[in-house]
Amino acid sequence: MAKIAPEYGDVSAPPPAHIAIIMDGNGRWAKARGLPRIAGHRKGAEAVRCAVESSVKYGVRYLTLFSFSSENWKRPLAEIDDLMGLLRRYLRSEIAELHRNGVCLRVIGERRHLGKDIVDLIEHCERQTAGNSTLDLILALSYGGRAELTSAMRQIGRKIESGELAAGRIDEDCVASHLDTIGIPEPDLLIRTGGEQRISNFLLWQLAYSEFVFLDAHWPDFSEDLFLDAIAEFNRRERRYGATGG
Image 1 (cartoon, one colour):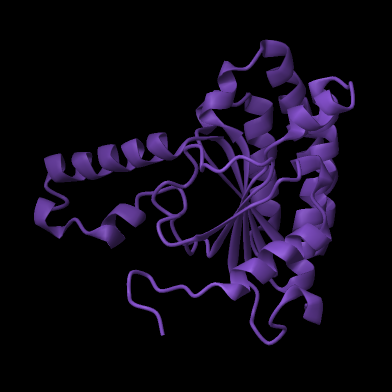
Image 2 (image 1 turned 180 degrees about the horizontal axis):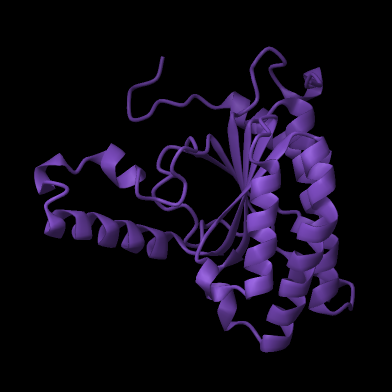
């Protein structure tokens, strides 16, 4: 595991255990260069590799990437087709490298909206990497935080109706156990690229106590240095979870 250089903050502090990233700005990156939007998405796929490799290098245990939101289905059909094509190529081309590096792949979101061949690829990749423990890579595909919470409430409601669960036993742990992210710790750090400062329906429950770092750089320009800058900012903050500071 690589050490973080002194210029990136407290080198004795461990990295965040779980980093979540909203990968924003592919289209704007392409527009600024007079390129079609798909060019930005292709370049963004290279930045995904950088984020994964940096997470492995510096000992981050969980990395969640907001890859395709439930709202993204409203985009033009041609762009959706391009994005699904990129996803197919990523799953086919990167799985061997992920497996060699000890990365466990997991996908959250509404798979019923994805093509059957993509679902088959996802399931194959998840099975192949299930025993890996260097890094858990969670891809949020066709994912929306409100839809996830609504699904959890439906599951809990059905258990109450059937008598399996008493309403009085519902607590935060109960809700969390019905989310897509069951078994995954909540993110310590959320990074959003592209200059916007919102969470866009991403991990609404899980981000309750996360630290947020917003970067002006568009996602295709994401680099190891920006990754370390975000970790350095995280390490400068005091996480109080509602308590008073020291």
